[in-house]
Amino acid sequence: MKQFRPVRGHRPAARGLPGSPVARLVAALAALVAGLVVVLVPGTASAAPVCKVDYTTNQWPGGFTASVRLTNLGAAVSGWTLRWTAGTGEQITNAWSAQVSQSGTTVTAANVAWNGSLATGGVADFGFQGTWSGGLATPSDWSLNGVPCGGSSSPSPSPSPTVDHSPSPSPSPSPSPSPSPTRSPSPSPSPSPSPSPSPSPSRSPSPSPSPSPSVTPSPSGCSGTGLVVCAGFEDQSGTPSGEWQVTTPNCSGTGTATIDTATAHSGGRSLRINGGGNYCNHIFASTTKNVSGIAPVVYGRMWVRHTTALPSGHVAMITMSDSRDGGKDLRIGGQNGALQWNRESDDATLPEQSPSGVALSAPLPVNRWVCLRFQIDTTQQAMRTYLDDQEVAGLRVDGTPTTDVDSQWLRRSTAPRPTTFRLGWESYGSDSDTIWYDDVALGSSPIGC
Image (tube, rainbow, N blue to C red; front, side, top):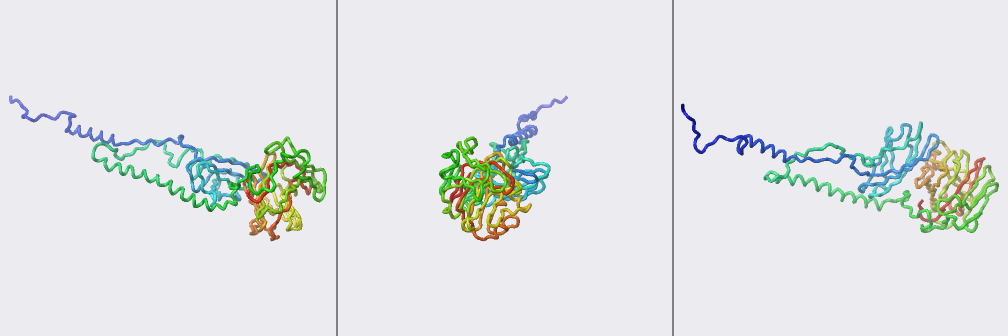
């Protein structure tokens, strides 16, 4: 039998040894596994909050106003869009300090020219008015620029791991091109912050923030400039005296004006007005300061608290003699349950007392302190009024007659010139109220709350 002998210098390939097909397959698989880079996208729970929204409403049957304060908790933005879901029976009719639109129950508010830039921690205030039926809901799903405020999700919310199949930089020569594509995307996000600040300065100079309550410098005390009247009534006791005198224009009745030590917005005292019903029950405390020189714009600010909702009948709480209208009064008060301005000489009202006009005003909240501000331009017919730093749309005079708002008011073309300032109560029906005033200021510069 012929015996097989291996040829010298040649041995059968051993399984798994280098150079064998199996070895080459194993090596290829090892290289592929080494090239897989697993990138774990952070889960949504770790996303930080991007904003905070404070939302307060004043409501009455069938209508409401809402004040919204947006605080940016994320990176600085040069423009913002806030979105939320309204109740099924709610319909927004107008807004201020933001462009607000509604589609079904989805509401979108976008910045206006002067409040678009928000640094981290920056705040934007705006408000709107609307109607409701069935109930008034409090929104809970706020999102800023498409990202939920609570940070519960992000624009790319995929919680599952994704696999980057790009080759990893292994020692083999092939990875040398890999670092350049891998790093090239990385610089592209880094330039994006530089364009972001550039719009910010361009908007900053233009914020003609006359409409913006946020630019008003003086806090609730007397630190503002150009203040002619500034009173917390801390130097008063009993019956107002000295810089404040009790007056009863036209006729008097059972109403009283006293200094209250039990209720105050700040400090320990306030002015209390017990206002009685029926005409000829006028009661006011009038400043002795000369306000006739405040110009060109008269700015006023006071904190007000009262116990009874504004009635359907006509009442007045703040009056100012107008030297350009024969000394007749400009009056801030209420009618049909909402705030209004009234002119004594011709009984013109702002807004007009149509249902649409009244809906553009707002009630005066009861049993809490409310910041009431106004500004009267003495060079042209222009007036603005704010509640808690939110402008009341129906109480604006801008020189262009607007139906249901200032058409009636602008029938008189001369700008008012206030020469006195009084706080109190006048009722032209049977309505009564108890009102407190505190931290009162009047001057020629904007005054904050």
